[in-house]
Length: 205
Image (cartoon, rainbow, N blue to C red; front, side, top):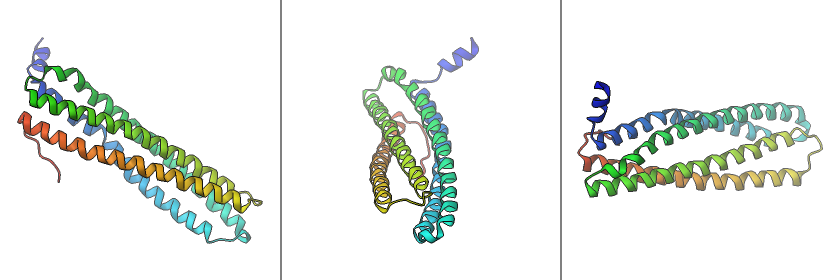
């Protein structure tokens, strides 16, 4: 009973605050994987540049480099999976605030919180799109490095594959931009929520 009372003594705003900050904590793994994925992308780009500088006389070297690139793609797949798990956990925690929305008595604060809730869920949806586009790009890259291991590979087939990859990355960039825009918008609402609720929180600039 003591624990139950202690829990209930928190205001609705404080409970929302707890869910918001826990959602941030759950996204720390996402941030970590983002950095590591970028490093792997750069390594793979270096390998790709080496491959395109080679001629078919260097087929064995091309095969060896392609295998290295395929290993990096597997590592990227693994990290994308960890990244997604982090976002899913964050979403589950964040959505706990839905049940608290009707308990907010201050109408201005309620409007801000509802807008914040909507924007954050748009952000999660944008991540789903981003994750799908990135996963498709990885699949196409994997196919490219498998093609490069065929000695009788025709130039047209190679060109088509590279064009498909470039097109898929346009979708990745588009989805990433939407995700980033929602992130900025959410952070603005979150700051507004804390200021209106008079909850002291320091923000990183």
